[in-house]
Length: 226
Picture 1 (cartoon, rainbow, N blue to C red):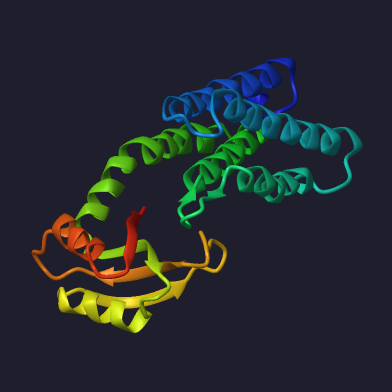
Picture 2: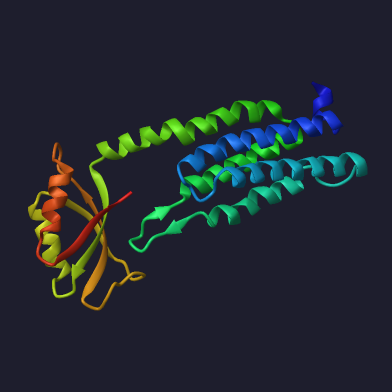
């Protein structure tokens, strides 16, 4: 096992192969969900991180000076730029791509572990990351369904005051946590875009209350944010 932690032809081949394989597993899962970063992106991130860490270890062993983790640290910070490119804020303030960005960051960390020969961390951490991306997705949806707190995006007629709109919402038994004007997206001068955080009454049927909110005077459109 010690030989596999040193820079040898066998260890290089093993680390890069494992990086490609494990990165591909995560990328395939993301690809099947039609995410922005898919099979090739995840494989490249994991293999690239592995090669960078291998190079760092090689330089340190050959020259015997320098920081053995310096290049790896640059990967950890640099991967943020790639992850940020997968995060998209839609016109109604929905945020897409956070899980994909986090997945890329985690896969980069796994690639660094493989690159330095820390096989145990990659082999034990890899399956856990995969379970988080797959099984926890369903659990996350279940938690959201049971929650009484919701974020809503609303487009409201400018002729209607926010005060009267808030009063109408409260009359439905809904508690308002906050109402914010979305200044980044104004469809036209006659409509205002609002971000509303509400708490539904206990045992209330969310869909029915949202339908009643959508029928309030001045409400042009209403959509739940996820």
